[in-house]
Image (cartoon, rainbow, N blue to C red; front, side, top):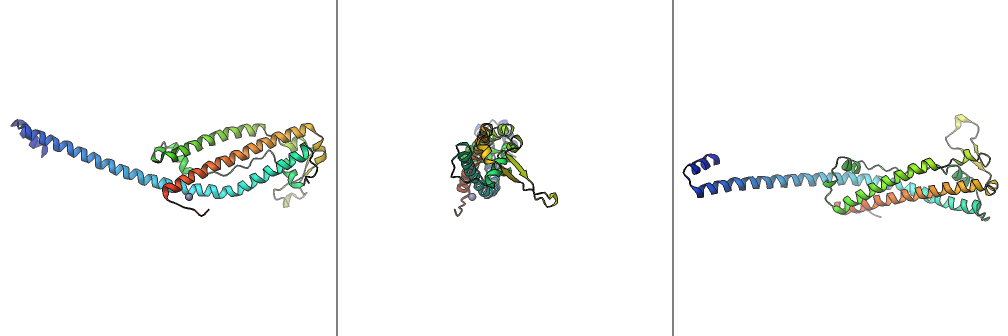
Length: 245
Ligand SMILES: [Zn+2]
């Protein structure tokens, strides 16, 4: 219709008609593009909302699970501090017991916080982090991922350097397995010769190195989860969610 009118205007060299017809076409295309952009923007915001809601549920799960881990990290830090005082510098008023012995025997085992954030991983791996419109949140996610990556590298080093002290010092740490394999529940009792430990310089050196690695690992885990807390705070602000603290 427009093309026919335009062709006829060109044939009759009706310039004002030509300009009006061209303007109608241009304005039509412009409006169409605007509508398309508005539609796409709406779609993107709906998708962002869905991502944030999924991410929120995952963040809440990580934090709930972390409360148990935090208690363990604090407990191990306290035990190591008592151990190092009692064994390395022989502070005599610290009573060492089977819990301290178990801590020594397990000082090469790291308890990793179960962190599962599939929505965040999906946003990154699919290159869709830009769907998140809030710049602060995007930065918090990127910083967390950098820290997570750094933590993984540190952990790889710890795993290769850590020492299983009960293998290296069997005369100082003995397994006591209880004797009945059928009723064995997976817990092993250890017996430690604390006095002999105090007299062994190599053992004290190795214990201190395991303790240092364990402390660095635990504080790294706490730091990582605190970054997750701050991501959660930002998601709460965007979604308008409040929690009872
Ligand atoms: Zn929340």
